Length: 381
Image (cartoon, rainbow, N blue to C red):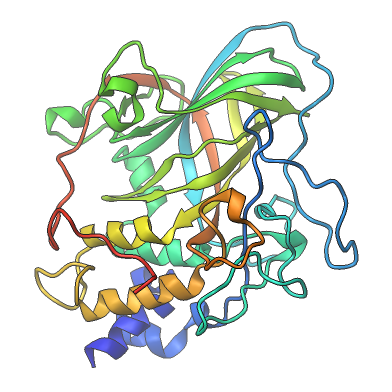
């Protein structure tokens, strides 16, 4: 019985948070039917992921790629922007005709009808890409994980409460529609200033006065100011008002972090009365299965009091099966389109951000290690 209920959790995406688990299991099992995903690309000489040159089978799909680096510049300012995540969603948009970018073709392959860019687990269903070759096989799985991390509130509720966040710092922006080179730094935040005092963090107002703490893991040396970022693209750019950066960083989902590699971040810079905000933001990358499985251990087992998702937990073993069968890409871009086994999930998330301020440095206690400090797992066993 425990195993069947555990399977229900991992087959019931957002429904987990909204309905009783047994009811959800009888109504929905979207992960069993979801067949979209795949991702990757080789880095160029300047660290940027390459653009599609228009080659390949044009009849298969018109690959969805991020804007190319502009050839001209049309601004003369020197702007610094601090942005805080305002909304975030890893769920694929159910409307394939939506005007916003759903994600990106990361591996240059339109899986189905083309072959996958790595060797999936034998028991896995085909990981067919979305329209335009968009890779996001792990999107719904991340939504499920987020609902299990905190079954009382979703990610956006936590952002609006100031419990945790993500910050972007753009430097050297010329203020125009096109800028051939800007700097993008990413900082994790453990909440708005005030949370470090042990009280309830003040909810952000998004009026330019919000001060967000900086996680020491985001900073070289773990301290500041000055705030020297660990997650940085010094060669990002702006093309027709769209910021484009290639930078690897973890995404916070409550107590759990999702490590990303081979990532691209885009977002439309919109000038407003407070400075700028970002619309139509996209974070697309690869979540290595080894890190993802290991990091699941911080989640409470919903069916075993005091248990966690690791070791021989029945719930964990079913979660592991889902993760390994969803893997559709390489964590290392250089292994794309080889016969090596897939070792990552392609993920894509949408976000918006608002003007903010950098606050003080504030770290969290070390994560729990219910299966021991040496616990790791991957899909090879």
